[in-house]
Length: 356
Image (cartoon, rainbow, N blue to C red; front, side):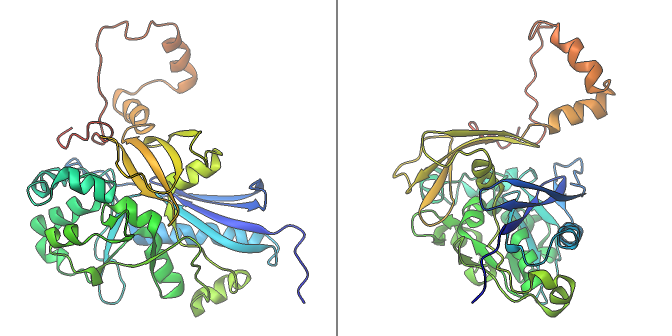
């Protein structure tokens, strides 16, 4: 009979818009010292695109896992958990090779397609059914936009997956989409927990082109031979399905009940509350995403956070923060009389303007 471990650890992988981070946590959720990070580049062409290279991101994930596994006793890691920026989507060919980049929530090029979808689907019914909006940040508009603007590329795709599914396909030869990531896409019925029929019909999309839905506890085991050799310490370790980064944000800020709201500011920003069960009716302007079959996240998000000061610094050649911040601190707010809405990556909550 195996002896219980003195200090069982979970290896966590966080895939964001600017980099990948890996870290170990103990059973109490306490961060361990060992960590690894690799940057990657979000490509933002002038037409409003915001895409990632799926192979570059996957390679970065594998490198940080290499570093963690090399620096930790092999028998202490009992699970691997991951989250990614959401929503995101990438198209694969019949061999499972990416033929498109990863289209992220920040890609605004599908704004006209979102407007068109509102003539095919009732916006309020869609919001109540999926918890999402007919907006460029969600997957339905992106798929319609790509089909209309790049039909040859669109028809090369045999399967649409999220980043987490692509990683699972590389490592296990099997892709599953968690209810969390699926609900963030705008393609999931939040009540039935199945891919949403009316939306697929409006897109002309066959359900077989989407992933197998799974809950957070349905783990993957048995790495493919190349990764079994690369990570022998993880060969028998369960990998949990990838969840949306907002779930990790609420867990990390200890906002796991309806009386606490998590406020997060990264590249974008959001406010989220975790609720048991699914609300019958959703407030206007707010989304509702699944955590698992029991719980949901209710809240709103803005597309502009730290990307605003980064853009200002690059464009206006601002001085470094240690010089700029004290100078700003002595000025009265809005003292110049000019107010700007910095919707550099478009607008989400609460207005959801497609042309911002």
